[in-house]
Image (cartoon, rainbow, N blue to C red; front, side, top):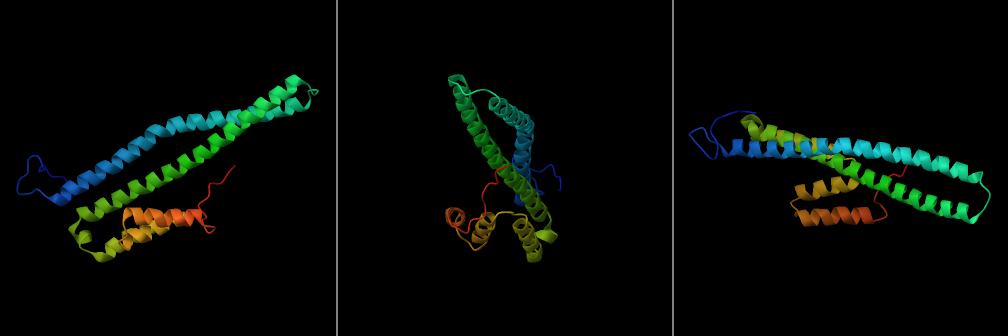
Length: 182
């Protein structure tokens, strides 16, 4: 990235709206990446805690098999089932978080690629470079709904229209963007 002392607060003859754009794109990518890093340790701790809870619940279930039927056993089983359901719901929530984190990682990579193109006049005015970036972005998507949204935006549709098309795909029988349970 080109560095110049000229900026929007103190412009000189070297000031450039392109450079200002690159700075803001870089800032956006940095903010997303910083937030992801901050959340990563917390998520790791939570994941380890839930893994431990699943192991403990499994041991509780095994131990319950050795206990004679009684009202106390039934009460413990009821709490075991409720806790197990909550743990499974939490695991699903973590999978959604993981999907969101992957999406944000793509956003930071895409912003960086966009910054490189906008910052270089040789790339900025070269349609082939824009095409390469678009291909790289689309190829990075793992879900069909993301590709549908991408294609819609490149076809000139509004954000709302693109989101609607993606949602329709997810809600259809063809939607393959389901969360995998483990």
